Length: 490
Image (cartoon, rainbow, N blue to C red; front, side, top):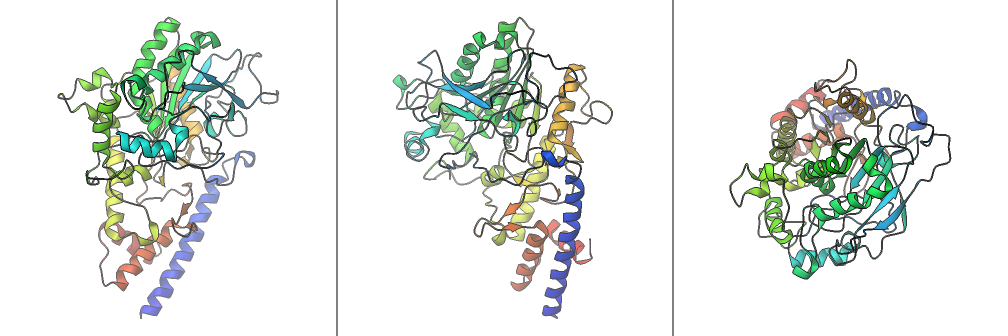
């Protein structure tokens, strides 16, 4: 009987894998062949850890607005156009990285274009001398400008290639490297501490330095960021909006694009007595960090909390209530860094039914937190960050791609429409409603952390079911329902 059941489950897996592949191929067939790219493994810096890759090429940003008329002075897709972004150090040399070296930015100019995108890099943080010392030894690039290359190319939404970035490829693109380790909030010079923490000042100085480059004539400025950079956008965008209004005489509009930076207060956080920043409870790290960095938080948000509780402004849903600037959220419903904050390591081959059910609860909480945000793209996938990845155009929610959703959002802002559904047939409030994690057929491939082999989510679920049977355990909750559904051929 056991052997028969095992064979039956294998046959079900095979049938469901074929079915899922057909669905994925059907979705991907909507994407022009020239725009499709093979899966590329990117090294991303998430809130709970820093991953480094030697000689890595780091991102840049661009804009998904379809322009029906493009000024002749703006580069066309068939014109020769430099893909490189050039490094500039800030004129105010006192605005420094952690080690006191001058901060800076990379710029790719688009003469004649009055649209700009400024991207804040991610990379978590350090919150005391010990964790900062470890970070400096293991990831110096995130604390110093001394080894930054003179140029870099953009990827994803920062790409200068029309085929990779069909709507925003020709914007004035600015990439601001993360070297302050303070979630872009600090205001402490090196003379006051062992390390400088000047993230909030770096953003302001970058904008000031861009005045002679033409940002004073900007019509639209998109402040974007991934992971800790996305959280930095949330905390700084209203301040940047006020600064731009002063510079442009109310002619420039500031919009926020937040990728994987919308964190919710964890319910099952790690213990506070931890050894380093990658293992600490998120709340403890933020509390200690904001004190060390002299963190600058939005005043409107701080007014919501008692003295000493202002650190809660780090969490997107709590900060959003007091924000004025329009934002677009790109947020995985099963964000891997949110799971780590909840003390869940997505080691798929050893995942238990209890972990699976906890993951589903987190997804439901994230989905609930996004309901009142008008512009959202939230796939039901395990992943972290998207907009600077080479496959950023391939993921879809309800058959709508991210570039299309961004275009619809921007069109709604131009037309002064506030409806979350936007124009007829042009939605930008897109949250997956399929029933289990990674159920969207356009999700990035899952890889086992040990073997590095690609995994199918149905294989994972059935494997957990068989493992529970072997141990004499009963599957609970949604996992039990899903296994039953698969056994009954969907």
